[in-house]
Length: 525
Image 1 (tube, rainbow, N blue to C red):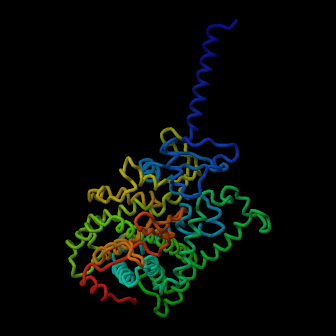
Image 2 (image 1 turned 90 degrees about the vertical axis):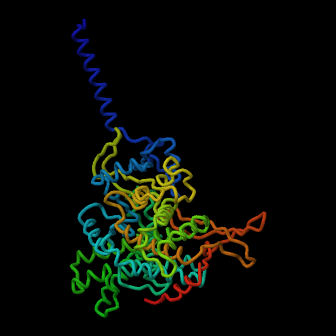
Image 3 (image 1 turned 135 degrees about the vertical axis):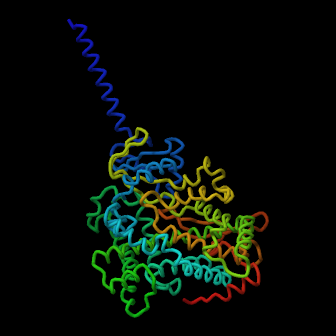
């Protein structure tokens, strides 16, 4: 017969077992997410085109933090600015690593760069090099170059309104490459500009999680080239050559021409080489090559997209454009061209630039982070090695934070820099992985925005019959969301005729004085 004491013992053991099971189960509780199939997990559900839109829909069902599994590889998607700050900012020591990208990192070679480098000494040394040319203290010396190129941009677009796309690409390229390598880009066909642009297009496609099966099935990197399914190896080989040409060719030019005086100073590579009498230790030189590549590539497409989006927004919201023109006239006057330093006294224009960044984030999902150790958030386990992606698009279009999120409303910030900074923090990355070139980027954007508003009216383009052309934009859907082309509609009353356009607008000088000021701008370095 079982005694009372035995029953009590059995009950105690059962209770402890239940408690232990519950503890173990909860300690391994993952964030919620869509149902996972055996082996493949959620691989069949992962979007490639505009994934931020899919993840925004998933948020409605699963919440602010979502867990998915791609063939055994864990991925956490964060759909909340609050959660992103809690994890990726406040716990940056745990969330500052990068996942291992086999296609983009190993096969194409981007893994050498500051952008995809794992968190460690090499990454820290590259960041230190970047800070010498692009840190906040170094940026004011770049203002004159940024202002001059913005003035040339507007001067050239006034001559040929269809050149807006080309001129923005060229002038931003001139600024970044001049500061990085001491080289002045000659025109839009210069290989020192076209090659890195192509390399960044390739990066945008290669770095999409799940876009290449080799990232989830690493053994595929060893497939023979004749085997079906190995086409990505040929793609990687071609992209690697483009990437290495974009990285090494301008650096070698800077190094070789330092002695002849052609390398313009100060510049990131030129100055460091000059300080070392033209010869750096091998390890330092490798780091400099990849740090320079990171800054050049990271600033081209992103700044181009933001600048082009500004012109589009000003065209679509002429009342906002007019209000900004009144502000710049009241602070700067009309007898001289504005300077970057004037932006401190122009809160509404700062609000405009912030709203452009919010409405058109250049990297809508950020660059993926990785977790360096097991972590817990609100009782949910995020395991070491988990890839973490922030849905920046949703954070900047969350209707609970930004009512009417698809409308351009710079007044939503009430000229409050604290509110603007919340957008900027999201747009430029998190924690220790935040973009180190943020102040340089703003110098370029402010130069373009201020020069344009001070001197020009941004108006709809007209066709041969003087019909107004109302543009929309086709964006890419990769890691970097950049403008592919403008799609314009001519309204003839009841119907619209759709065609492709090289420019969303036309520019008209605001006054004869503005025209004179721009005419006096020299167009050669």
